[in-house]
Image (cartoon, rainbow, N blue to C red; front, side, top):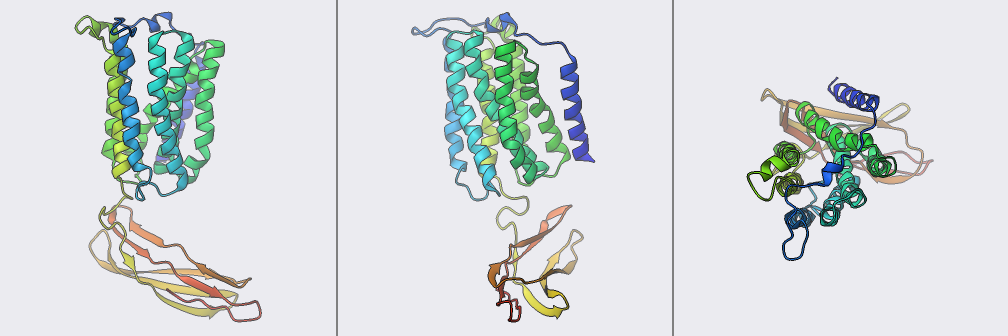
Length: 335
């Protein structure tokens, strides 16, 4: 029901946006409050304030090899694309602010969409479905790039507005309504808060310029970089949801196998563990297989946890299986 609510909201936002007339690029967008030249650099502070993006992207590299930060390889790929988008945003935005116009703005917006869409896909994977996130990663990035190209060719900003703001609207909903796969929800909320601040600073650039010479736009860059820092730092430190130091106690399986007609039945008891009420209980895992070929295989660990109390959890250790030749007898044995 909660997932349906989020999907329904996203569909409604898409339909509502495309019912609107085309949104042209406002020429006044390129007129920033602070246009001073310092040390021969036009719009100095708007250019130099992009440096934090590059520093944040470099800082984010520390999580790339973290074992606990990613459950699947595609998540690491998506994270690297976020870093690449943020790093190239520093370059593209600096290039744009040296000579603000629609042509240079293209190179500011393109890396931004790569970062947005990669972050959107990995959040879908974390909060909704790993398979959905993996399958949507490439199409979402392609959609983001196409929205910028469409704007450049047609002058219509509607697809780009959707790409930029839909993730920032649905991310809080996913963070609040859906259970996380990892720890660190506060970091996600911090990212959303700083990005909201960045948009406010951008919107009131000239009003702030009446008080501070720099205006609001350079500080928009700083706030957006801090938003990404919140996210990257969360990824670097996150663990699978549960006890951080020892998330999943391993239970040594006591495997008992018995012949059962058309296949082999294996039964294992995970051992006692505390449920959400504090009571001790033994959980049994059963599975059936019909051997067709001679193999030596190893099962994946089986995770069981209480939905309302993730700290109450257990993993049944992997089990080795040995299946003899077709004319022999199928057997199974525990590790």
